[in-house]
Length: 298
Image 1 (tube, rainbow, N blue to C red):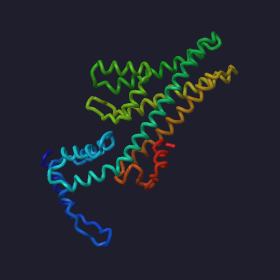
Image 2 (cartoon, rainbow, N blue to C red; image 1 turned 60 degrees about the horizontal axis):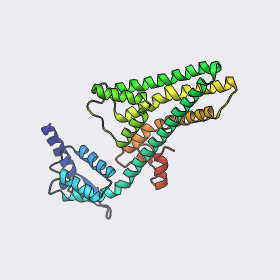
Image 3 (cartoon, helix red, strand yellow; image 1 turned 180 degrees about the vertical axis):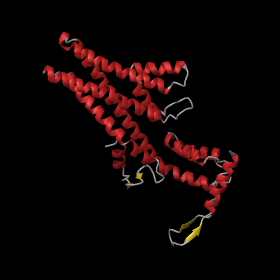
Image 4 (cartoon, rainbow, N blue to C red; image 1 turned 180 degrees about the horizontal axis):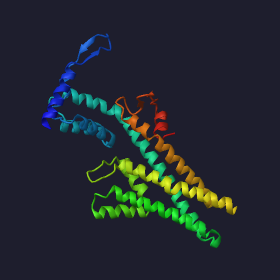
């Protein structure tokens, strides 16, 4: 491992030593010595870069102090150039990183509001079917069956995601799925940026996506179809049923729209040019209003 790291560092140093750039003022090729930029203490450059980004993104106190502490731990004593570059870079990238975090939180919050509004109204409609007597008994049974299947799928997903963990962890995850707290738990994990551990069989963000798509397939769409069918055949419309149908449609539309943009959003976030660029489309407008609109997926 050390030999491989040494070879990679040697190759990187050679590439940087041979690097030439055009002078901004004169347009003349100028040799640039970047040897000081490479820290002797650094062995995994990608990990260090990701750590630096996480520190800037998660900093709630003094950013300069946080970056200085990071540099003291990751850089050598002679890496003054790198230190100054990172100190100057941190305040420039912080607004975009913070905006991305706020945008992610806004999307997750809106998703959770729509999800739990839909779940609550579905249970209210189920109660209404139960109080309707023999005329609505079959609808009560069908609606209850849909909610049971949806809950069982959530429990199955919780077990699959935690099957390599202890029994206590599995039981807790399955209990949270039983009481319909799966979307909330996994939504918070996605917003906090919880990393995949060795015991995780599925990445935390993919679990959140799986929960949302499972909700769409096994609960939102079937309940919407059933409620529309009941309204059509009974000719009886209540405020609860109308609100439940509208909340189901809103939840379904949001899940499908946001999920369809997932690949593009991840692609833009991974670009070296920044979070607002795309390899095919190019740069996306990065004004404050455009950032908010794009991050909300509107």
